[in-house]
Length: 488
Image (cartoon, rainbow, N blue to C red):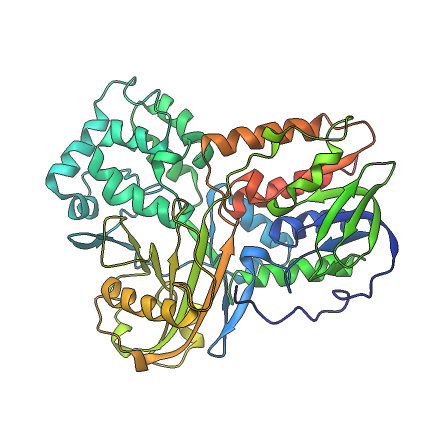
């Protein structure tokens, strides 16, 4: 994985001792781990964060491409509930919150590109007969979707997946042309594999109340804050990581990068063995990284091991993000709005999504020279074969950058040339997008039950997207709750 330069803030590379004592150890330095560590440190607990990569931030870290400091992972957050905005305000970042440009996004279908509904939820339209929905679905598809408004309540009531629900209520075209591309871009998964309550917790109740999928979506959108369904930060979402890390350090915590937790032992103090040979003894342990879930096994039951099904999590998708900085004045007109999501059936494009960063974020457009544009393409779905990481493999950097430029030509409708690429970067994310399937939901519930039933005196908690669900709106409150659970 391409990564930013190592974090060089004070406190991130303290020389380890052979044996250490801390009030808390947080395993995983992504946003969840940093949020939990901040909560603990501000409560007066001496807290150590260990992170295996060369910098903290996880899927919200930043990197430099062509002299621009950009997001290497998440570049926005969902506004639902106002949870993230309130937390950013608490971090002192309220003035940095920005909305994306009002251009809307598109979907690439086998027959061409069309706009996505601006008032939908995961691609489900709240107004099936609106002009933008009809343009993408066609008259027949839009008419079928409108049947949702009159179908009996029982239709789709027992659907086992989001895909089955949409298919029953609105038809195959809504699923194929709207929902599947959006869900593929957001969750790197197919809607037929996702549990409705896991991917959109409020949707089942809203559907029961309003007896229509469209009306349920309308109600959920109306309950969200006014304006765009997503927001970001001027400078990029990685600004939040910097603020979190600085606050942890300011309250006496420490961040140790290039360091993994490799084993644990139960006792009055939990013993955590680190990859550098240090053994840390701590009163509290928070596991915020799915790759470290095995650390919980010796701690979750009196007989020294958790059941296998407790740790049976979905691995999620193996995702590649390719960022291109282009000298392309022809993109000044933003021919496909803020970006394009891609239907699986589009054979000439390998990417599942493209974001036109300089069209989406006014702050980024202001930071780039005239005619310079930033686009980012995403590759990898949950059912894809793992990429070959050998230098000669299909994921070798030059080949993937060339593939991304070819895909951008199709998705943006502009004949971009090789010499227009000013800079590029390839980033790989694994286990950052757990698929919210019924299996994963059940494993999460089992793990939470095991943590709740841990032996008396064992202060252990879990947090992160792997247990809370994708998105900062889910991750942040869950991480706060995890930290508070071990403070009692």
